[in-house]
Amino acid sequence: MSSPATELAPKKAPLFPLDKKARKIVTDPLSDNNPVTVQVLGICSALAVTVRVDKALVMAAAVIAVLAVSNIVISLIRDKIPPAIRIIVQLSVIASLVIVVDQFLKAYMYELSKELSVFIGLIITNCIIMGRAEAFAMANPPWQSFLDGLGNGFGYGAILVLIAIGRELLGSGKLLGFQVVPDAVYAMGYSNMGLMVLPPGAFILLGLLIWAQRTWTGYSEAT
Amino acid sequence: MAFSTGYTLGFATAICIGCSLLVGSAALSLKDMQDLNVERDLKGSVLEALDIRPEDGNASGEWIDSAYDTRVLVQVVDPSGKIVADKGLADVEAARAAVKGTDADPELFAVYARKDGEKIGAYGLPVYGVGLWGPISGYIALEPDASTVLGATFFAPKETPGLGAEITQPSFKDQWKGKKIVEGRSPRSIRVVKGEAKVLCPGAEQFCVDGVSGATITGDGVDIMVAEALELYGPYLTSLRGGKR
Image (cartoon, rainbow over all chains, first blue to last red):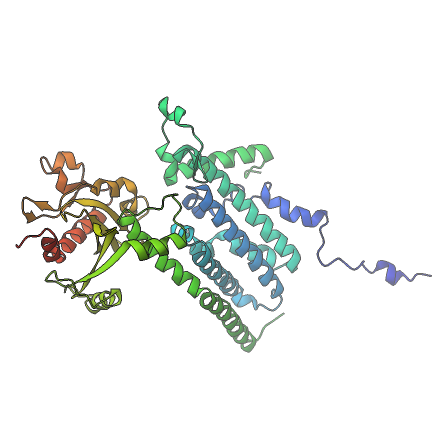
């Protein structure tokens, strides 16, 4: 004999679900709702650190780490944060995490951290991170927030690396520091595109990426 | 749910303490590692300026430490050009700190000499100046004749990337090789000119390098920095050239 109450009671939800909904949280920002190409956030760093692939990779890893952890932390304390000071609380958490990441880079990847210079610190002001904290982590449990952070981080990182591949390949004829354009091609009169090393090169590539991606997903702002 | 003012203040304090603990412990626990990196970075830049390079092209931390210890001879020089044997780099730093923010010249300065076996193969002079946004620095390496530039290295941590910061790039640095700092028997500095040295310094190309377009003030900073350093080291360099003034 089963009472209606036990039937209606929801099954105890797994603590770390990996069902369709959870997967969607991760995959959505990779393409359909990409923070860079669809929401057009985080453009500053996408232009600044994409001259070389190794810089873009480190930047992407740093953003993924900060975004995932800040989402978890904010989500854990989301019910305790007084709404009046929630933005500054989010900012404090994010800023602390960014400083920690910066310290780690200075200790273990000194050369790259020197070249990335202020841009690691500027992750604090990256709209994606505060945006996800405010829009997602404040309203969702930690696990989902973590997945959301990963998804958005990788979505951002993927675009960064794509742009960096284009810029390093066309601008320096290299990938990850290794020459990929053979000397024979240079001998035939090919030369590196200086424009790609400069910020406008990133603008152009980013524009093309946004165009290609929106054509592919059929996304349009004028709906 | 409403939060009282007391709760809000308490919460803010708790967040502040939590964040400071996190940042503080990270900074403290990684400090040794970071200091080692900074030290190796400095040594590495001295080695680079003196044209000491690893045979396999891989400047590992261990290589930097051993190459610096075996190949680099640090000399401390006073304004009269004499080598002060009993002073070290720490004294040079102290002398520099003592005149910081003033126009006075430091009482002691360093020379990094490259040991090629028994002989000295190059002299590296550290130079310090001011760019557009902040301090710039570098090394001017001289051939044993103390008249010809072997190479130059510059650091411009605050300068604009793509403009002023281009002075750290090979396109600017490589021009310095082979330039002269003496004309006949008298010292002469190297100018950073706006435009092409070939056009602007007819007949005196060995005293001119091309500045970076869009980085006039940084270029002027390099110009002044090198001129001041050559004046400071003048007596020492004259003695190296084996001559009296």
